[in-house]
Amino acid sequence: MGVFRKIWRLIFRRSDKITYLGRAGLIFEMDGAQYFVDSEMLSGDFDIAILWDNIYPYGNKEIKLSQKEREVILRELLKELKYEGVKADVHPFFYDNQ
Image (tube, rainbow, N blue to C red; front, side):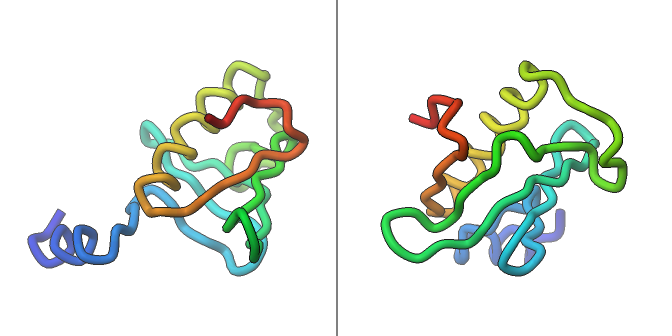
C-alpha cells in the first residue's frame, strides 16, 4: 500500500476492504475473496442495515454460504464498519452484532 493511500486511510478512516455500491449493497473483501453483502444506507440511529440472508460470493449468487460462513464474514465486516465509524444493524436480527 502506498504512503499516500495509508495517510488517506488514516485521515478519512476508510477501509480498503469495503466498496460501497451506492444506496444498496456493498462488496467486502476478506482473505482474498470478495463477497456481495446486501445492505441499505439509513438515516437515524444506524447508518447501514445489513441483510443477513443475502451474503454470497461476488458475481456468483448461485453459491449458498453456510450460516457459519456468513457469521465469519459478518463478524469481520462489522469490525471494518466500526473502524470506519459506521453504525450497522443486521436484519433479520439473527446475529448478535454487539
